Length: 58
Image (cartoon, rainbow, N blue to C red; front, side, top):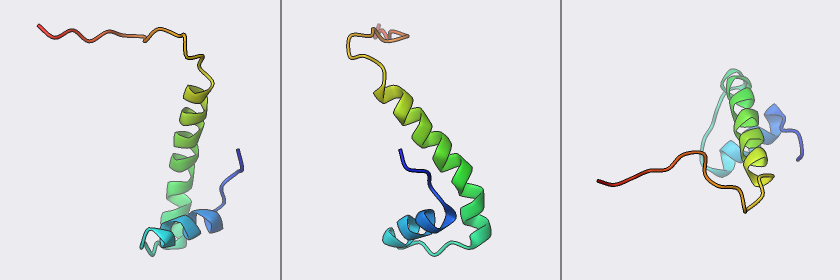
């Protein structure tokens, strides 16, 4: 996965109609990177893996 930069995050934000300052983008960057890492980890889990928890409706 390609590493995000403040400039690439700015481009993504502008595509969504957001004009964020450099400070705002710098603050968001670690959060977006963590989210991307979490999604990548989920993608690596085999489809046969059972869920970690079960929800029951009474």
